[in-house]
Amino acid sequence: MSNKKEREKRREERLAEEQKVSSSDNRRQRLLQMAAGAVFLVVVAVVVLVVANSSSSDSGGDSNIEEVGAVDSLFNGIPQEGLMLGKASAPVELIEFGDLQCPVCKEYSEEILPEVIENKVKSGEAKIDFRNFTIISEESVPAGAAAIAAGKQGRGWYFIELFYRNQGEERSGYVTDEFLTSIAKGAGVKDMAKWNKERKDPKTTKEVEATYAEAQKFGFNGTPSFAIQGPSTNGVELPGTLQTPGEFEEAIEEAS
Amino acid sequence: MRMPAEGTLRRIIAFVAAVGIGVATYITIADSGGGAPTCLAGGGGCETVANSSYSHIAGVNVAVFGIIGYVLILATAFFASDAARFGGFALALGGFGFSVYLTYLEIFKIEAICQWCVASAVLMTILFLLNATRLIGYVGSDGATAPPEEADNDDTAAPEEAELQT
Image 1 (cartoon, each protein chain N blue to C red):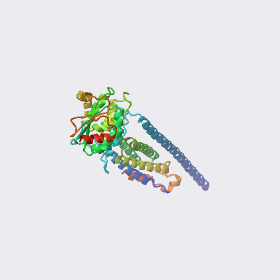
Image 2: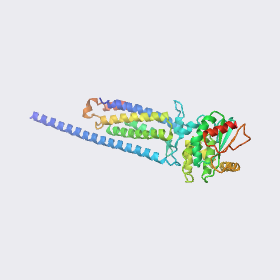
Image 3: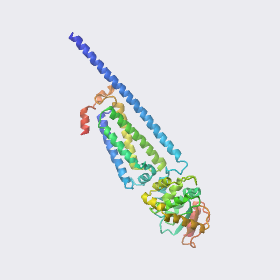
Image 4: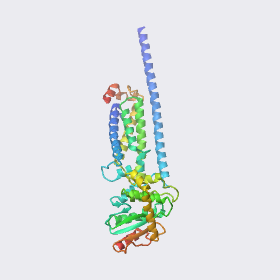
């Protein structure tokens, strides 16, 4: 009788143990399935984010700023003062009259000027002074003022170059406060409150208008237009249409 | 391959998460004053990344999300339950996915590499692998018993939990 009871007890214990293992197995199975589902969701989320980012950046003019690193390395180690790039002691001053919305200025900025900066500005032979010639539309004025305000914090050329590299379609309304703020942040403007105040200051707008008048005085009617002055020039001279890095370098050598 | 003991995994997870908290906190503090983390190996990568528009989400530095993630993962290492195993895995998985996305931004969008961000991405990857190992090896073991095939590795019992918590 006691043997039977013992057998019964062992049987119950075995069944209880089996049930416990089985429920534990089920839970394990369920949690691992959930984990696999979570992995799938995260993979999908990352792919969606990457695709959304790569397609939104193609058209430019949005707040996803590109080429910050490329711009940083282009100007790394070159002194800047206002919108002047290069050593103050450089004998030749190349003056660029540009409009930040202008696609041709963007081409110059990306394809021609980097070589000139590398060969003539870094060496201290020349400095480049950017002046706003806001001919495209009214939106160019706040853009130019924002560049001047960035220049007051030593980030003017970073701002200009980054603007060009993220430029949208001209007159499309992309020059919003949000866009300008993103460019300023990407350009490394430290004091955003100061930048905001200065770019909206009427004095800054007047500076933009003053260089516009100056460009008209030179007889320019398109952007970018260039003027040059150095020890061998008679004050500020107009070098004509310069289209290659070689032509710019030649003009700088002649002026020095 | 022999599955490492869960206690060992939990200790390593706690250690790596603590290092992660340190790294993310440094990035947050360096950025908070309008500055940027200093790249120890030189170069301006850290400054470029910190100054980019991608460094903040809704005005909050992404490193803050990192701190929160690491703290929560650290917390899961203190408990030997399925909730902790699954929670640790889910958090590390999310952190790993986010790190993959941020690394993509650094390489293809910002075009600059910040060593501190790389360090955090590596730590999050390690945490993901450790938490995945922990989940696969020990989920369903109820904190007291390991899955049948790993029964000899069971060291998830209460005494160790107490030891970890002290």
